[in-house]
Amino acid sequence: MKPCHHCGAAWDGGGKRQPGPRDICGACSAYLHCCLNCRFYEPGAHNECYIPNTEWVGDKAGGNFCDEFEFADREPGPSGAGAGEQARTALDRLFGDAGDRAPESDRLDTFRKLLDDESRNS
Image (tube, rainbow, N blue to C red; front, side):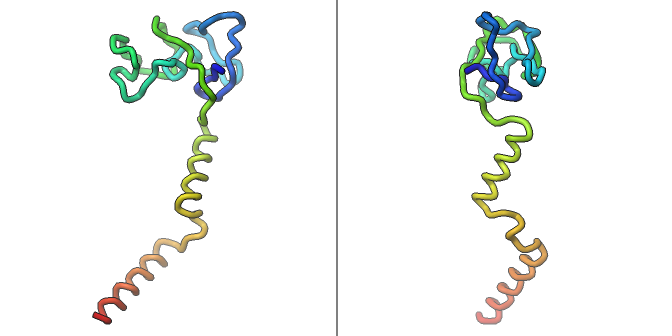
């Protein structure tokens, strides 16, 4: 599947092998011929691209004219507001829901009391 980097909607292509530099997603109007949709996009690599001699593209989500572009064939990942909510849920599972914890001042008071008790017993 060739999903839009922004919304995850599948690109059908209408018979084209690759989107053009100004083609946009029908669902969210994001550019399709952009670094974030390219199979060579790699944030840790030089110019954030696996192909070492590509020119720097400042706007990774903007349409560009890169000759190396190949639409990434992958499962859609989380993006936008859904990604934030998924991250919050994962953190809550890992550390517990913030609503389950005492306010910061209560936790500090409890910690101070434990330290005072420990120092008195020493």
